[in-house]
Each structure stands twice: as C-alpha cells, then as structure tokens.
Length: 256
Image (cartoon, rainbow, N blue to C red):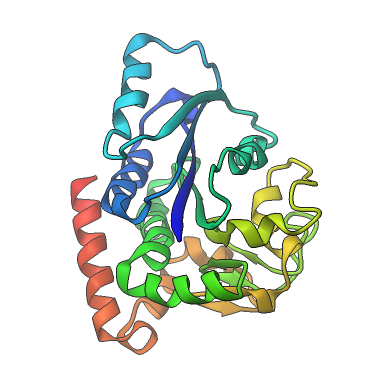
C-alpha cells in the first residue's frame, strides 16, 4: 500500500527554532517511508512573509520528490485542526496508509525541560517510523486496524481531549480507506485538541495499535525526566530497540 504523509508545521513567531529543525531533520531521516502523497502545511501567524522565509519553506522539504506545500495562516484557537480534514481530502489514493504529524515541541521553550521535549519529539517519529517497528504496524493497519500510534491513553480526558482514548502527542497512522468508510469521518469540529481526540472518536480502542506504551494514565509526565528514565530501558524496549533509539537520539540532538 502507498504511504502518505500529512505534516502541519507551525512556526512560532515565524521563527525556525531548534525544535522545528529537529522535526524537519527527522522527516528527512524517514523520508523514504513515504511513497504516496506528501502534504505539508506551513503555518505563520502572519502569512505576509518575506522572500527569504518563503525560500526557506520551499527548500526545507526538498528531500521529498513532489511535496504539496502550502503556506497557511495559523489559527491559535484551532491549531493543526484548521487544515486537518482539508489535508485528508487532498490524498489522491484512498487505498493507502497515512501518517499525520506536526511540528512538535516548538511551543515549549523552557530550557529546564529541553531534553525531555527532545525525547518526546524523537519518540514520536522513532516508534512510528523506525523500519523495525513499522513492521509491527503495517500488517494490522493494512488488514483490520484503523489507527496506530504511541503513548495511547485509554481514558477520557474531557473537557480537553473529548474521546474515550487518544494518542498523547497527536502523531498517528491511519488506514485511509477504512477511515473514509465511516460516515462521520469528516464531521469534524475544529479545536485545539480536536485532532488529538479524532482517532478515539472514529474507532474503538480495539481497532487501534500502540507500539510504545498504552495505559490508563495521564501522560503529562512526558515533561518529567523520571518518566523517560523509566521507559527508555532494556527491560521496556529490549536491547536492540534501545540501542537503535539511543544512537538515533544522540545523532539527532548533536545535529540540532
């Protein structure tokens, strides 16, 4: 099956910060994963950008063969949900798998949690796109499951994330055709947490996959180093995956 990418890239204050650089570097690392449509929305608070910034936008994703890049206006209330359904409608082959992600971490500027944010960002890509791990995603998602992601939280977090379950962090795969078979797939109310809530509104938790932690807990601890020191271990990940993860994060953060 074809594999599509939908990426929402908000540039806080129009700046290309270190988290933005890390997100784009990780997209480049896993670019070969996507052989279908690549749909990228780059959002500014003010879209009247100068030529230098527009050149950066157009050139930053040149590692994709034919990306569909659009400069859009950010809505601080609706965020990535503003263009979410529109992006799905731009997919040309429904018989495909689609990965949604966004410019993770660029709204968190505290230096005290920098390393935790980097682990969070890297994990969102690694546990969804690493070639070894993707093997455990592709088969169930192609055959019977609708969604796949990581850090699956199996409790309702209303009034923020209003769904029975969701992927904390809002990175996930979905089977495009199976999703669109839902009569309500595009009956979508935009909001700050709407995309995060979307999988749990469209499918039962039994119709989803989680490759890294699924629990009835609050993952706000992702900002806490204690969480990462407990889960990034050989006992949790296994020696091979931990080595791949460790080598990857060291490379990514040294280049950032």
